[in-house]
Length: 221
Image (cartoon, rainbow, N blue to C red; front, top):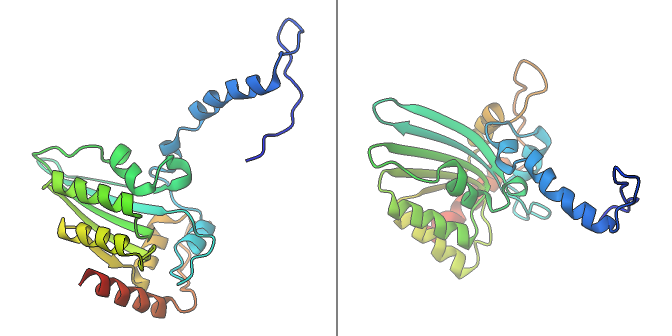
């Protein structure tokens, strides 16, 4: 990203800062403190424009180079509780799937059962798929169901292997149906009016679901 051209700041004693670039660099940590990455996205609803573009289950996902991950965590123990929210790559400083295990659910207590559901705009990359597999292998009390809008690099052999390992580790992986998109719309997307606006399916939503559903079944077989 190109740096803005700004005049050098003036110090309190009236002298200009010797180097405007050093001053700009000094301001960056302050900006990060004011905008913590996960506080921006956790527990919030997606803007409708993001959902309509990023979650669309098109075959050719040109320009859709981010992952939006909506999650529901059901923790069962003496006192059951539920957590929900969403993550996106831009604010996570990591891929959304990896960020989930780093920040949202960094560890699972042995005496509790964790039922986690993800609604993700696309399937994970190889690295995130491996992270998911390791998390499930490490925590036998963690159960993960992942519904994805699109398949990412599904024709690559390494990607297919990584998704198969996820399945073997216990991950329930499936393609989002039109009803799933409607659920995300109602529960994770900002509504401009007090009354929830009805979900409007886009063209070919059912056909695209069937296309990806068949491809996923083939590569997980």
